[in-house]
Image (cartoon, rainbow, N blue to C red; front, side, top):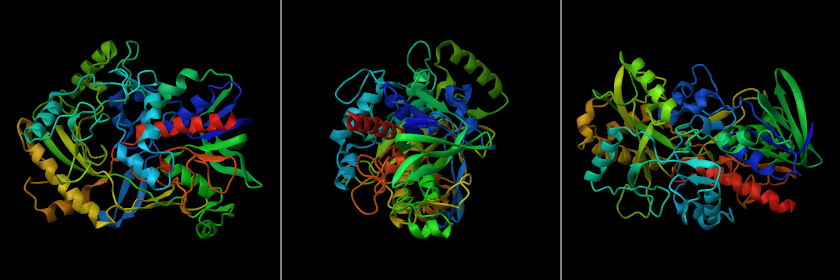
Length: 536
């Protein structure tokens, strides 16, 4: 097979790239995706993500693990990633957050020229179909449905009221003129009559509607194993499908959209990376590019969990089966039931100190007892509140575990390797506790798991080291920039090699102050435009 463009990975970025590049009928496009087609009921019903995220068994989920983390008492972290068309947007909490405008200005200042807030805002708007309509900050004509929540629970409103009682301002749009405050998330969920309440994964938004295009060829169950390189140019991709080795050739470009773990892994397997690492695994060096896999950043997250006698939330109990059946019937009628929940309904962006210029902490309020990525289940009902440091100082890396292309990558976030992250996370945990112990939210609690409620800073730090883990925002391992450690240039072309681009969260120079799905979609929209203008 031979095409103009071969895209590796059909996740959030890959779905956008395949749809946008195939809009031009003169382009032939092939998309390789290791997972399935992303159409299952498990993807469409938001609450069913709880069956996929634990990764037991590995069900539509890469279910990666980190290497032991010294900062987390040598525990292995867990890294669920979606394995289907739509990628992690098919299993995430659907939260639509762009980050703070200054995050993108910092990208540009760091050498990612052309990626300031002014540069990227039009591409956020291009992607967006916001139920509230268009304005200077939002779009209403894009493929991605952005909705207000259909059935937020009363306990989430109590979280907002408790924070308001502590003089935290209410915020109805975290992607508006001001990020700071407390409110409900907007979510990537269909808001039209036909599919109301269904998850709007990026595949459902961009790719599924156009898969009948004659110039678009999509292969699922196709695991890329190596980039083919001839005379300093990427010319195709080797992959495995159904137990057989296959190849596909690219006349113009190979585009990697595997995410912060899989994209650097495939580069390294193809001989692109730090020469000493490649030689250690017996891989022939095609390009000595030392930044590949470095600069890994992620949001480390700490959860405080509360039991409750209130049953209007997700839980395990004698009445839970009947409740889910009843909610499923309502979801089928109008999409407005408990099954449409994003789990994380409430949000707060907070400043740890009053004199800083932007929020440095984010809270996710969840209508269930979320413990160890839903891998530890507790009988009964309850709720949780997550807190994470928005711009961590710790830096990790992604390495090869060996030369086997089917092995998982070696992921080392080096969580809490910079003590400043722990200090700020302790402050965040204390701020979270104040909200949780304030009325009307406090009235919902009938006890707290793991903690007493009056821990010292040292005790909180010990709890963080024992229970904190990712909230699923890895970025930075194929960083864009203009210096020697940059993997791609500001047009996302791999430095030193023709015909190869990386388009996904791995190119972010720094982790943004918020959730990373919306920025990844924006990156892909821009990349498709770069290519269109280069070919014009």
